[in-house]
Image (tube, rainbow, N blue to C red; front, side):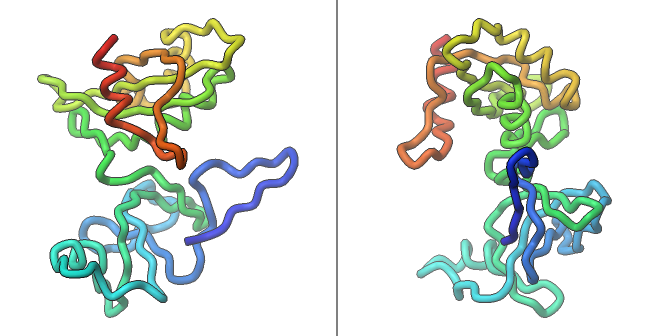
Length: 196
Protein backbone atom coordinates (compact mmCIF):
# COMPACT_ATOMS: atom_id res chain seq x y z
CA UNK A 1 0.00 0.00 0.00
CA UNK A 2 2.86 2.37 0.61
CA UNK A 3 6.25 3.06 2.13
CA UNK A 4 7.78 4.65 5.21
CA UNK A 5 11.43 5.18 6.08
CA UNK A 6 13.14 4.91 9.44
CA UNK A 7 16.72 5.90 10.07
CA UNK A 8 18.91 5.88 13.15
CA UNK A 9 17.53 8.62 15.38
CA UNK A 10 14.52 9.21 13.15
CA UNK A 11 11.98 6.41 13.65
CA UNK A 12 8.87 6.54 11.47
CA UNK A 13 5.54 6.61 13.34
CA UNK A 14 3.77 3.24 13.46
CA UNK A 15 0.95 2.87 10.94
CA UNK A 16 1.82 5.96 8.89
CA UNK A 17 3.09 5.77 5.31
CA UNK A 18 3.22 7.53 1.97
CA UNK A 19 0.71 5.76 -0.29
CA UNK A 20 1.69 4.08 -3.53
CA UNK A 21 -0.14 5.17 -6.70
CA UNK A 22 -3.71 3.85 -6.71
CA UNK A 23 -4.10 3.81 -2.91
CA UNK A 24 -6.86 6.08 -1.62
CA UNK A 25 -9.07 6.55 1.43
CA UNK A 26 -12.85 6.78 0.92
CA UNK A 27 -15.68 7.77 3.26
CA UNK A 28 -18.82 5.64 3.77
CA UNK A 29 -20.37 7.51 0.83
CA UNK A 30 -17.45 6.72 -1.54
CA UNK A 31 -16.10 10.27 -1.37
CA UNK A 32 -12.31 10.52 -1.30
CA UNK A 33 -10.97 11.79 2.05
CA UNK A 34 -9.25 15.15 1.55
CA UNK A 35 -5.72 15.48 2.96
CA UNK A 36 -5.68 17.23 6.33
CA UNK A 37 -9.49 17.15 6.71
CA UNK A 38 -9.40 14.91 9.79
CA UNK A 39 -12.08 12.72 8.22
CA UNK A 40 -11.80 8.96 8.47
CA UNK A 41 -12.49 6.38 5.82
CA UNK A 42 -11.48 2.99 4.50
CA UNK A 43 -8.26 2.29 2.60
CA UNK A 44 -8.83 1.25 -1.00
CA UNK A 45 -6.25 -0.30 -3.33
CA UNK A 46 -6.44 -0.69 -7.09
CA UNK A 47 -4.23 -2.47 -9.61
CA UNK A 48 -3.62 -6.22 -9.62
CA UNK A 49 -6.43 -7.32 -7.31
CA UNK A 50 -8.38 -10.61 -7.23
CA UNK A 51 -11.69 -11.08 -8.99
CA UNK A 52 -13.36 -12.00 -5.71
CA UNK A 53 -13.89 -14.67 -3.08
CA UNK A 54 -14.62 -18.21 -4.24
CA UNK A 55 -18.37 -18.85 -4.11
CA UNK A 56 -19.00 -15.89 -1.79
CA UNK A 57 -20.84 -13.15 -3.67
CA UNK A 58 -21.69 -11.15 -0.53
CA UNK A 59 -18.08 -10.95 0.67
CA UNK A 60 -16.89 -10.19 -2.86
CA UNK A 61 -19.37 -7.32 -3.19
CA UNK A 62 -18.31 -5.88 0.18
CA UNK A 63 -14.56 -6.09 -0.48
CA UNK A 64 -14.23 -5.40 -4.21
CA UNK A 65 -16.09 -2.26 -5.28
CA UNK A 66 -16.11 0.11 -8.20
CA UNK A 67 -15.82 3.81 -7.35
CA UNK A 68 -15.85 6.44 -10.11
CA UNK A 69 -15.22 3.73 -12.72
CA UNK A 70 -12.19 2.23 -10.92
CA UNK A 71 -12.28 -1.20 -9.24
CA UNK A 72 -10.82 -1.25 -5.71
CA UNK A 73 -10.06 -3.81 -3.04
CA UNK A 74 -11.30 -2.53 0.34
CA UNK A 75 -10.10 -4.95 3.05
CA UNK A 76 -11.58 -3.00 6.00
CA UNK A 77 -8.68 -0.88 7.29
CA UNK A 78 -9.77 2.54 8.58
CA UNK A 79 -7.46 5.49 8.11
CA UNK A 80 -7.15 9.23 7.75
CA UNK A 81 -5.12 11.27 5.28
CA UNK A 82 -2.60 13.73 6.72
CA UNK A 83 -2.02 17.19 5.24
CA UNK A 84 1.15 15.94 3.51
CA UNK A 85 -0.79 13.10 1.83
CA UNK A 86 0.51 10.38 4.18
CA UNK A 87 -2.01 7.79 5.31
CA UNK A 88 -2.33 7.02 9.01
CA UNK A 89 -3.92 3.64 9.72
CA UNK A 90 -6.43 3.67 12.56
CA UNK A 91 -7.37 -0.01 12.68
CA UNK A 92 -9.77 -2.62 11.41
CA UNK A 93 -13.40 -1.64 11.24
CA UNK A 94 -14.34 -5.01 12.77
CA UNK A 95 -12.43 -4.10 15.96
CA UNK A 96 -13.77 -0.52 16.20
CA UNK A 97 -15.25 0.37 19.60
CA UNK A 98 -18.39 2.54 19.62
CA UNK A 99 -18.55 4.37 22.95
CA UNK A 100 -21.19 7.04 23.41
CA UNK A 101 -21.44 7.51 19.66
CA UNK A 102 -17.67 8.01 19.24
CA UNK A 103 -15.52 5.59 17.25
CA UNK A 104 -12.35 4.37 18.96
CA UNK A 105 -9.81 2.36 17.01
CA UNK A 106 -7.99 -0.05 19.36
CA UNK A 107 -4.68 0.18 17.51
CA UNK A 108 -4.48 3.94 18.14
CA UNK A 109 -5.00 3.47 21.89
CA UNK A 110 -2.64 0.47 22.01
CA UNK A 111 0.15 2.51 20.41
CA UNK A 112 -0.40 5.32 22.93
CA UNK A 113 -0.25 2.86 25.85
CA UNK A 114 2.95 1.29 24.45
CA UNK A 115 4.61 4.72 24.35
CA UNK A 116 4.70 4.64 28.17
CA UNK A 117 8.33 3.79 29.01
CA UNK A 118 7.36 0.88 31.32
CA UNK A 119 4.87 -0.84 28.99
CA UNK A 120 6.00 -3.80 26.87
CA UNK A 121 2.74 -4.65 25.09
CA UNK A 122 -0.98 -3.88 25.14
CA UNK A 123 -4.33 -4.90 23.68
CA UNK A 124 -7.41 -2.67 23.84
CA UNK A 125 -11.00 -3.70 23.11
CA UNK A 126 -14.60 -2.80 23.89
CA UNK A 127 -16.93 -4.39 26.43
CA UNK A 128 -20.66 -3.85 26.83
CA UNK A 129 -21.76 -0.79 28.75
CA UNK A 130 -25.38 0.09 29.61
CA UNK A 131 -24.88 3.82 29.31
CA UNK A 132 -22.41 4.17 26.41
CA UNK A 133 -23.03 0.97 24.39
CA UNK A 134 -19.39 -0.04 24.83
CA UNK A 135 -16.52 1.12 27.01
CA UNK A 136 -12.82 1.00 26.25
CA UNK A 137 -10.78 -1.47 28.32
CA UNK A 138 -7.48 -3.26 27.92
CA UNK A 139 -4.68 -5.46 29.18
CA UNK A 140 -1.02 -4.47 29.28
CA UNK A 141 2.29 -6.02 30.28
CA UNK A 142 5.16 -4.10 31.88
CA UNK A 143 8.89 -4.42 31.47
CA UNK A 144 10.48 -6.74 34.04
CA UNK A 145 12.04 -3.96 36.11
CA UNK A 146 8.88 -1.83 36.22
CA UNK A 147 6.56 -1.31 39.15
CA UNK A 148 4.29 1.17 37.32
CA UNK A 149 0.64 0.89 38.26
CA UNK A 150 -2.29 0.79 35.87
CA UNK A 151 -3.38 4.20 37.18
CA UNK A 152 0.04 5.70 36.40
CA UNK A 153 -0.15 4.35 32.87
CA UNK A 154 -3.68 5.72 32.41
CA UNK A 155 -2.60 9.13 33.77
CA UNK A 156 0.14 9.13 31.11
CA UNK A 157 -2.58 8.64 28.45
CA UNK A 158 -4.84 11.46 29.63
CA UNK A 159 -2.42 14.03 28.20
CA UNK A 160 -2.13 12.17 24.89
CA UNK A 161 -5.63 10.99 23.97
CA UNK A 162 -9.15 12.36 24.01
CA UNK A 163 -10.86 11.35 27.25
CA UNK A 164 -13.31 8.96 25.55
CA UNK A 165 -10.34 6.97 24.13
CA UNK A 166 -8.61 6.42 27.48
CA UNK A 167 -9.41 2.91 28.78
CA UNK A 168 -11.86 2.87 31.69
CA UNK A 169 -10.06 -0.20 32.96
CA UNK A 170 -6.54 -1.43 32.32
CA UNK A 171 -5.40 -4.75 33.80
CA UNK A 172 -1.72 -5.51 34.10
CA UNK A 173 -0.87 -9.06 33.03
CA UNK A 174 2.37 -11.05 32.83
CA UNK A 175 2.10 -11.42 29.07
CA UNK A 176 -0.28 -9.90 26.54
CA UNK A 177 -1.86 -12.76 24.55
CA UNK A 178 -0.72 -13.07 20.96
CA UNK A 179 -0.80 -15.87 18.40
CA UNK A 180 2.53 -17.47 17.40
CA UNK A 181 2.65 -15.12 14.38
CA UNK A 182 2.35 -12.06 16.65
CA UNK A 183 -1.28 -11.25 15.85
CA UNK A 184 -3.44 -9.95 18.66
CA UNK A 185 -5.45 -12.61 20.52
CA UNK A 186 -8.44 -10.52 21.56
CA UNK A 187 -10.61 -13.46 22.77
CA UNK A 188 -7.94 -14.52 25.29
CA UNK A 189 -7.40 -10.89 26.34
CA UNK A 190 -11.14 -10.64 27.08
CA UNK A 191 -10.92 -13.79 29.22
CA UNK A 192 -7.93 -12.40 31.13
CA UNK A 193 -9.87 -9.22 31.89
CA UNK A 194 -12.97 -11.16 32.94
CA UNK A 195 -10.94 -13.35 35.35
CA UNK A 196 -9.63 -10.36 37.30
